[in-house]
Length: 369
Image 1: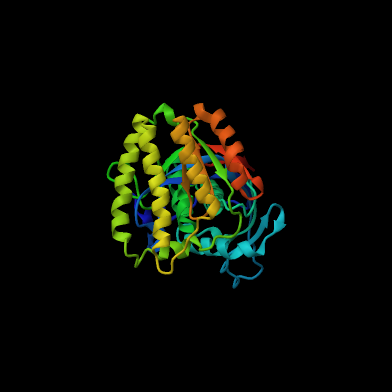
Image 2 (image 1 turned 120 degrees about the horizontal axis):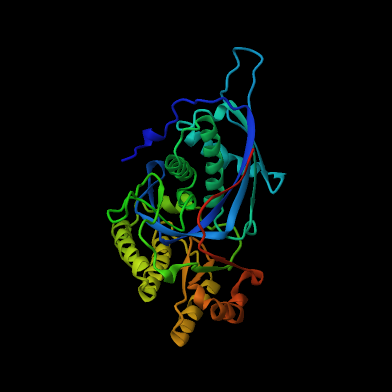
């Protein structure tokens, strides 16, 4: 079993003065939700997610070795410039600084370089889609590309596991955006090689019903989160229903594992919608308490239920910790479901905005030089 110490970089076989990489990393949507964490971004319960395809962050990492004129000068600080869509973005820098501080133990070479981080999203900024997962994952992939240049003997398996490990330290769900169309994060006895330290690709053969599964994201509210994920997770520490929730999640993951193998869409819908509502129930019953759904969120849910009852098309919803609705459905029901969305649901979206996406495959290297 891999431990945290296995990810501490020891020594490097090559010198590297400058260069750059470009990686993309997708957002993901949890089917069994992670809500509540322990120290060092360890999840209180296992989770499983669909990796998305089109909603992603593209990040270029340029690096240049620092040089000092005096022997007394040392690499005592992190040095980086941060650009968002080509423009300086100072308000993003504290999050990156904190991420680098968290991973320094495992990547001691970071203070040897000045970095230029240039990042952009394929989805609208401030659209209410969580970008921290895709953003941190893309940065982690770039950092691991640098480490692999310093240590070319690194195996591909180690490369991806450490990338997921590092991403987790920046944003828990980011570890599920590294590799795989369906990813499990958190130790679970039925999931091969599952770990609290990093995400692993779902190892079983996935039923054809879930091939190219569709996710249309309805942007109900594009405003800032009413409560940050960090605050929300912390509220689970003294939550009156936390113990039962932490028992429920692995049970639901066991059920979903079988469903993904046997293709039972009716049971898939039950688990996924129940998990979404449970997540919001946890927030509504914490202290302080939050209602993150909007009236339009509830209207959309009710219309999805009516449409499913009338047509028997296996369309369902899930939610993140916000008001937006992810509409999930098989690819062979795409035409009629999109027509339903256009006819009945778009009116409940802010400025009529929605994004059509589907299951993807994780991070991708775009350029290295």
